[in-house]
Length: 436
Image 1 (tube, rainbow, N blue to C red):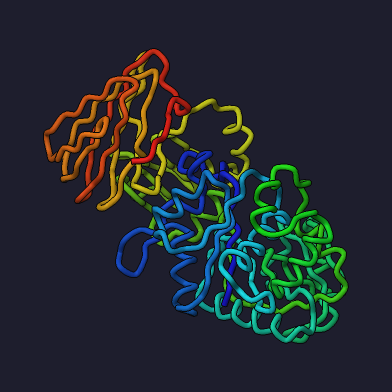
Image 2 (image 1 turned 30 degrees about the vertical axis):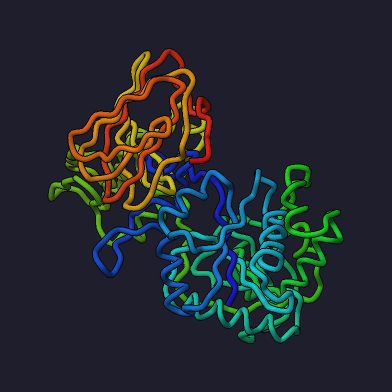
């Protein structure tokens, strides 16, 4: 089975855990079978592999998310990198070309496209296999998953099937309606459109060549920033007459807000937090190393991270985005392919960061023109390369790098350091990379 997971957006509705680099799908908030917390993308990836160990999984995403994906899923997962945001049709066209031209998948094979962050059980991924098998039959050019609605939602579009059969041709599509209109659709047998569909690779490749002048994946990638922004629905789905829909009646949740996310949480408290006996419907998600105490609260979410603190009525938490958009806050936490970092102090002329490197990983070999840096090793073992000179490092060692000096650090075990940046111009843009 070939699966493309669409991973986009910054997920600002889950601030302060999400930011411009760390989207909602990377937040580790669900407890796995081993008792460790896992993110939405880790959960979905694990579930796919449990259903089909040989599944080819490709994540279509922006370049800002690549490091976090490698950090959480490893280096073996396929990634179709979007050089910039151009909506879902260009993203899906690029991922389709990536599968055929880079991964070598036969254009006659089918692929399933779905969001990276649904909250679902194993039956959902069994249904994806069925979707792929139905696309293989070639009875329709697109096969959609229609989710049996549990209430008249205003958040989703609707699919009107021609019949009540498990698999049916599609009669028409309806845009996101009011709740009253949604109830009418449901009475007519309408299904939620969850943005899940399957097709033979050659079908979308042909559509892409009809709408875009390109030769292969590499050519499409090179001219990606010139493409028109358009959704897959508008570019393809609404113009296609041969579409089938398969019903899915299992659990399916879109965890796009704090309100819906807390509904899926198994625990009321993640991190350091205490609820007294008078609290009800309260959830705490705390990434800080300080305790949170909640007393006498009802239907409230409290979340704390290096980015900030949220205290909100759960229903009101759905309206967080315009307030977060007005905040001018630098990124305080990020996962990289080599590990993670957390900003612990910012002052005029200095910034202090706690850095964690995973075993066997290294930072880029790089230099800064406008700042000096000092590393203090808190724990672990590794080695540094400073202007070409190798040195072993361990707990308690201090390494000083002047502006302009090339440097990197390689972790042999998990390596934790405090990095102090000193200079009049401290910027993420002040970095030049070199080959080691």
